[in-house]
Length: 549
Image 1 (cartoon, helix red, strand yellow):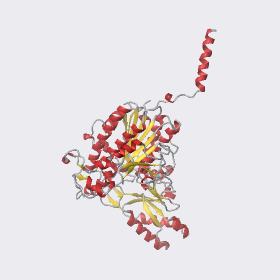
Image 2: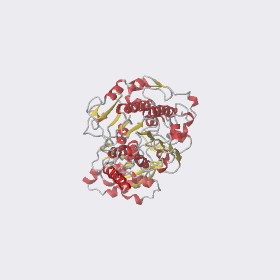
Image 3: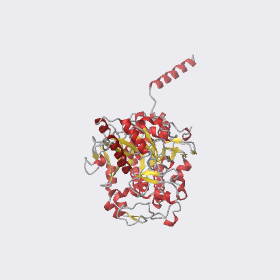
Image 4: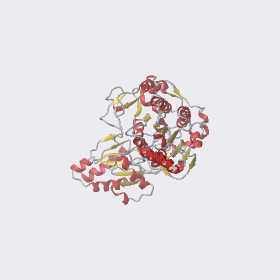
């Protein structure tokens, strides 16, 4: 009888527990997740500059975290907006709809920037109608892992995105973010849009009031070390390097003050853009008290100046090496701050890139490696001439961009022309042109003998409402450009598609792997870590080796 008396109260407690939902603390999660995307960071930069990295930045992530050493982009084109979208959605353009930094709406011929939104107003810019702030994530067709975190805890988490670039702040933060902030070049201040808030928080006003951009641009950019010691880089003042406005040479030191007076966005082309971004991220942690509540928060950060410096000076310049050495120091300071603010084992950080970059054409050619510039405008003109003679209609090609050919569909419909016949003539002409390895009809991909993984990359990158009807694959070493200096990206080659991927902190198993994984696997890995649903357009899978058992 005594056992029965003990049994019934115990049964009552079990029933009571089953009737009440568990508290959030029963789902173990880190206090804060930080996703850092280093713009245009090739995988080999982790090792190429390693002899001068300190212990607290990239080396700490490699030693204390998990490195996926063979992480590949599995779509085309390898551009900024597409990369940031893929990282945080686990999706590809075929589902996410983010088919480039900008694109042509195939039905109307309208040109669209990826985060443009005419229905919103600027907040913090010179006027509410300033185009710099009329931005939102509404062109993104799928959810992000940050959205899924919000859904999982009934919107009690806090999500914030930070970048110099609007698209790199907005798309990672997702649809449900508390905030996304980006830089307005005209004022040198961080701004947002009323998609997120009616006015800037006081802490943002305070940060802006110190005019950090103007303060940095009063200085000279000189390398951290004597130029002769930059052994991983070419000598200074090379013909493939671009110049700052107002500079008479491409060589160090760079007079930033004179450049800034001429072009306000010249600040982006210095390593100090990364410094200010991470300073602002730190201010966001303080301002929103990220990682201090009962629910997991998420901070997305894009260090964009690495991309601008690469575009201007090329990947073999002393400028790019100096930029990464400075970024390494900035990352070390930021991680140390998180240790103190959040707790060394209480946050999870991952670092990756949105794409890589090619060697400058002149540099490759000077070392007998095949490479060349590819300017789509002359090709557009010549293709239009061929089509006009054949079909007695001018301007049948609207544009060649994103390594894709977009046709003037309204003209083709109005003239009742046979589109397949137009494409056939275009394909025959394009396949004969220098630098083009393949020209693929996206309506008949199976008819083009293209090796894997390129075929899958092309199909993953094609969203028919926003992508051109013909996809072009260039020869290795060739890239689209309108100038003759610096570098670019966007192609299927490993220099553009092999990216770093490092995880460290709460829930992460230290180690490394050479197994091939994909950019689409990042979001589901973070979703598994957080015990939330993977994003609704996700096509990747969790990287199990990364996560503690």
